[in-house]
Length: 192
Image (cartoon, rainbow, N blue to C red):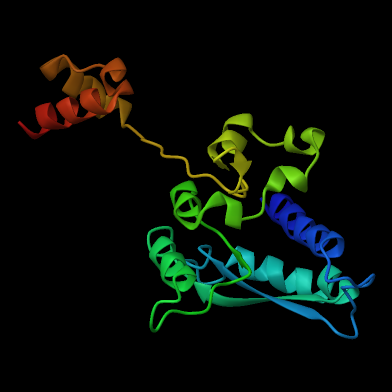
């Protein structure tokens, strides 16, 4: 995960170095650019994202004149409304950050045309190193608006001994748990 995040931050450097304000040298360690960032990786006491950003600021960022300043930590549920409020310049909202993490529905609400298209920063070969389905999940209006930095996995652990007894009593099988409908029917049978 750290390698993927580092690649993402390096890609941002590339973006800054090729976008311009008419200057041949936008980035300078003597006159650094500070980018604000919001992310959702702060639920732990020691955020891996903050450690990565600190490492970036002390190495590549320092060498190239880019500082990333985390101005808000959130969670996957709250970041969408925060971004909408910032984008709309709502009263009391924080200023819109330069960088942020979000879900595709949030990117859709903000308008994919307003966000970086990551396919312009990565070659097809580089993108092929990521899980294809994750890359496709980040597509909004034909643009890779949400880079697949991380994905959630939902897991269910079952005590086989107890489930076998339950299965004998109810007829519920492991196959019944393959769909939400089957899962909820099994939960109802368990409750009874």
